[in-house]
Image (cartoon, rainbow, N blue to C red; front, side, top):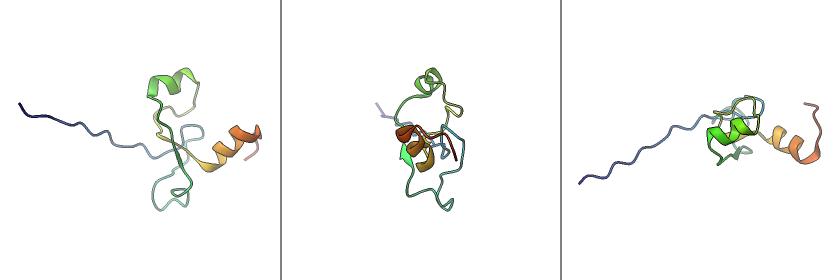
Length: 69
């Protein structure tokens, strides 16, 4: 029996603001992976639940409560 491994392509956008966090965007190094599944992200009312990362700015905003960009 052959074992098949499915690899999911990462969606390299912030799941809070939708900004590109892929290599070359200037936000690649400071992006934070979000290990929740899409359903959990939807339940958490994220604006871009298919995104697999949180950008540094949104992470800082969630820590400080500051909503300014």
